[in-house]
Length: 121
Image 1: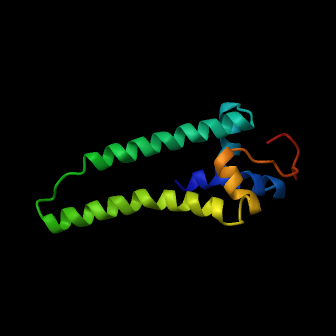
Image 2: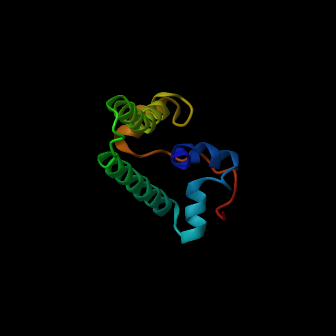
C-alpha cells in the first residue's frame, strides 16, 4: 500500500525533482507509459490489491477460539480501514493538494506544478 501514497505525492515530488523512487516514475520507465498511463496502471494495481484483500477477508479461517477469531476479525477490519483513512487524510490535509484537496478528490483531476526536472525520467 505504501507505494500508492506515491500517487498523491507525485506532483509535489516531481516539482522538487525527487521522483526516482516514485511508483509513477517506476511504472513509466518499466512499462514505457506516459504520465496518465502510469496513473491508470497504479489504479489498476491498487484495485487488484483491494480485491485480493477483500477476498482474503472472506476466507479467514477459524482458529477454534471465539476470542481469537474475534481479534483476528477486528485486526482485518482495522487493516482495511487504514488505507481509506490515509486516502481521506491525503485529500483533507494540505500536504499534497494544498487547498484544492476536496476539488481534486471530487473531480479526480489535478493541476501539475511546474516540473523541476526535464521530461526524461
